Image 1 (cartoon, rainbow, N blue to C red):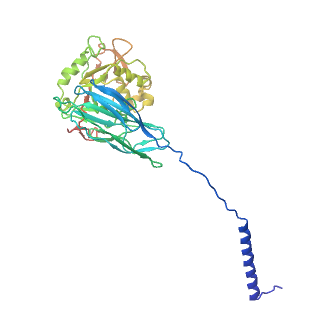
Image 2: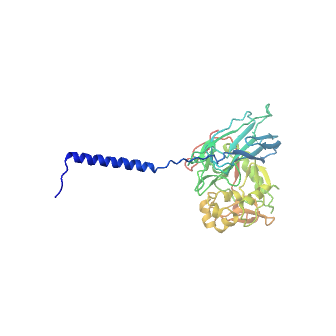
Image 3: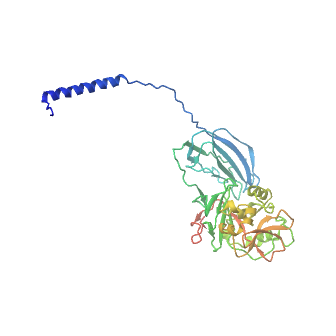
Length: 421
């Protein structure tokens, strides 16, 4: 039989339970421990962004260093002696992140030249770029004696470029890099068709791929294509079609500076007959004409050899390396050897390729005293005697345009670049 509890009994029991809970709580508290942790903290990361090197090299003409370039951790200093219009000197300043913290370039200050006869161009590092810990970046400063018609009254110019770095936020992704083509920003790409940063020459940009947007049309309707923006700011261009077939040199010599008969024709009759919209914007430039070995598999070494022998002129031809560097598939087509092996696929990723005929380069064949390299209608570069194949091979002129020209248009075939000033 269940026993019923009256209200007074229920209250006692509840009070008793409450007392037990209180006692349990006190008992539990008696076994608590108070833990104290003490120690010393220190910052182990290190912020160290500094200038670690400055190197100079002559781009064109005969400029010299008035004194050797120097640097400290925070400054780089150079003094250039320019003697003639067209003299161009390049300075490569290395910025190193020797610390443990990624850095971001917040601002780069580049003042205008204080002398119209002396031009400055700065390239390489851009605002917003990321300089990761233990990595380096290159700032290229190009100094040029502008093409003036009389002796300038002011013989000096000062330049002070300032780089402001700060700690990069966690997960920071820098903006897509760009270069200026004819005053217009053009995105720099790393794959496909487009404008690339040249990995072989600092401060230089080159168009690569099957059909990048590098068309330029002149007032007379002639269409050329931009090969590159050089480190000195000039634009190397290539005619979009071929001229009539002729020998590289009819006297069986592969000496371009002899001069070869093709050199004489291009520098004389052809140049003089150009439309003024082309001719007036061409500048005399230094061309690398060094001989190239057969089956070369080191493009960097090949470029150095090409540039070890030079010629100055208004109209020339592309070098062997120009053709290779226009290919977006450098892994399979980026050397003489690989391009020759994979020519059937390489011609599909090189805008310079033309199926309409063979055309000369300016590069000699290093293996004999008569040989010159030409681009064939299947995309392979073959050797030919300077005169023997004249009936089959055509010139495809190249030139350099002024660095200060301004373009309209977007560079496509339907909306090509056009010079507006």
